[in-house]
Length: 223
Length: 223
DNA sequence: TAAGATTGGTTCAACATTGGATCAGATAAA
DNA sequence: TTTATCTGATCCAATGTTGAACCAATCTTA
Image (cartoon, rainbow over all chains, first blue to last red; front, side, top):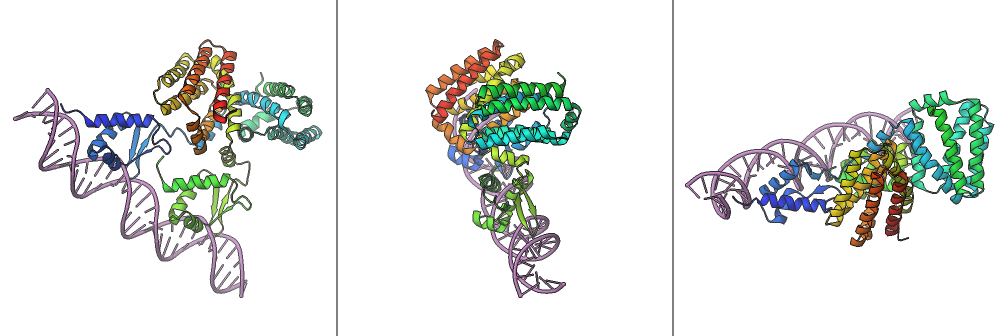
C-alpha cells in the first residue's frame, strides 16, 4: 500500500495546532497556501484537513476559510447572559467572597474623600424615612466601598452584580425581606464597617462586612 | 469566528472606545470618515459598526450619527468594555482573591468525575512536550477547578477573566514569562493543589492555590 | 420656513478569496 | 497486474470587499 501522505500532513497540522500556531484568530491558512507550503497537491491537503474536520479539530466554511474549534469557547455576551440567571444563593456566596475583600482593600487604599463619600451614603441611608430611599442608599453604600478599592476589575464585577440584582426576580425578593427592624440592624452594621474603614483596619472591615452579609443572607434566603 | 476585515475593524473600534476616545460627546465619526481613515469601503465599516451595535456598544441614528452607549455607565456593555482594560496587576489581585476560594469550594463540592477531569488536565500539562501545549492545559487545569465549584456566577467570572487574558497585550506577556524551569515549578504546585482537592481539604486547596498564584504573579509581573 | 448639507440605511454589480467536487493520468506498494 | 494514492487541472458555490448610487432622517443655514 502507498503510504498515506495525507495522514502525515494531518499529524503535522495537528502538532502545529496544538503548539499554538494560528491561535490568535483561530484561522488556518487557505488550502492552496498549505499545499504550496507542504509542496503537495491541494487535493492531498484537502484530505488531510478532512481528517482534522472528522475528529472535530477544525471546521471549514466555503468562502471564509478553515477554523480551529478549540479557540472559540464563548463570547463575552453569552457569559453575561448566563450570569443573568445566577441564583440568589450563588450570588450571596460571591458577595460574601468579594465584598469583605473589597472592604479590606478599601481600608488600605481609600482616599479621605472616598471614605467621606461612603460615610455620606451611610448617613443618608440612616436618615431615610422611606424604604425605597433607604434601599437606594444602602446599595450606594456598598457601591462606594467598592469604588474605594482601587481595583477596576473588582469594581466592574460589583457593577455587574448590581445590574443583575436589579432584575425582576430579585426585586420581588427584596420587597418581601425588608422591615423597619431590619433597616436598623443594617444601619448598625454599616456603621461598624464604616468605623473599621476610618480606622484603616482591613481585617476589621473585612469581618464587619462579612457579618453584615451574613445578616443579609439570612433575611434574603431565610437561613 | 471567521477572519473578517470588518471584525478587525470592530475590535480596533472597541479598543479605541474603551480607551476613552469620543467620550466627550459620546459620538463616533461618520462612517464615511472612518472608512477613509481605515482605508476601507464604507460597507465594511458599516458591518464593523454593526457588530458594535449588536453587542450594544453603540446606537445609530439616521441623520445624526453613531453614539456610544457607554456614556451610560450602568450599561452592561460599558462594564464589559471597562473590564477589558483591566491591568495585569489588578487581574492578579482578583485571581488571588477568587481562585483560592474556588479551590476551597471545589474541595467540598466537586464530584469524583470532576476531580478526575482536573487531574487529567494536570497530567496532560505535565506530559506536554511543547510550551504552547503546556499553556493550554495549564489554563484548562484552572478552568476545571472553577468548573467544580458549583457556583455559576463564579464560573462565568472566571470565563470573563480568561477571555480578557486571551487578548493581545496579555499574549505578549505570557510568551516572555515562560521557561522550562517555571513549567516544572507550576507542575509541582498544581500537584499540591490536586492532592488537597482529592483529600477534600478546602483550607489546603486554598493555600496551595494562593501559593501557586503568588508564583505566577512573580513570574508575570516580576515582583 | 425653505434649501442644502450631513449622516445612517439599503441595494447592486463586479471582483477576489476560499472551500467543495470531479476527473484523467502518474506513481508506488501489494 | 491491481489497487489505493497522489497530481494537476478545472469548474462550482459561498462568502467578503469594493465602489457606487440612491433613499430617508436630521441638522444647519439662509
